[in-house]
Image 1 (tube, protein in one colour):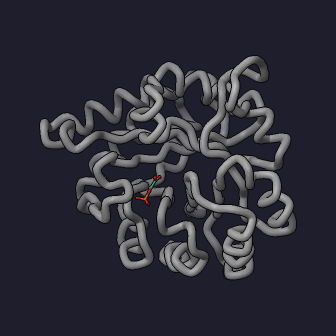
Image 2 (tube, rainbow, N blue to C red):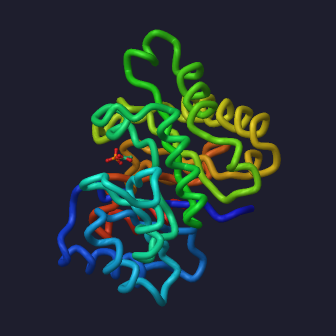
Image 3 (cartoon, rainbow, N blue to C red):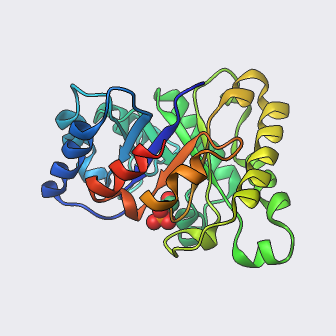
Length: 245
Ligand code: PEP
């Protein structure tokens, strides 16, 4: 069985002192561990990559611009993340889709940028509560997968994260059956669109994962790991989730 991929998304949290949490995660990993990644704010990517350079914990960005460089004040390119030591990048997070108007087409362009820079993209999809209540969760999520994953991903290493918007930071989680239903639909979409790499790419679940629910969520069908927000900020919580994998 392939190891699960568990990635922490620190969002806009963490000054230099928080690197001690990342080091505690690395120190707390057992001999048999899932693949583990941490995505701190851009200001900490390089320092975290240096601090964790001798261990197995991967470091990633939380977004990137599609272009290599240019007059894009405030933005960071995939090449810049790779240059800082990142090997992962989260793309299409619902906070960016909602807060910055990111479309599937823009996310797909960012995915191509990540591949160009040698980063492993983690592409987020997920329905809103209104969409779920309207019975449209599968249609919305598979549509996002079709639109946000470019053909260039065939043969590449990548992951998809299913993050229902209504479960992020709310303490609410879908039932295991709901998670499995969506993950199975994503798998079918990936396999038909991207062949072998689509059939093997891990599909992570994200949304209020914590130590107390991690083992159950991670044992659900087609759940290849987790994308963790709030509970990745403290090493003790994150290690509790890793123990469930
Ligand atoms: C996220 O934002 O990717 C996330 C999963 O957040 P939380 O775990 O805090 O719900």
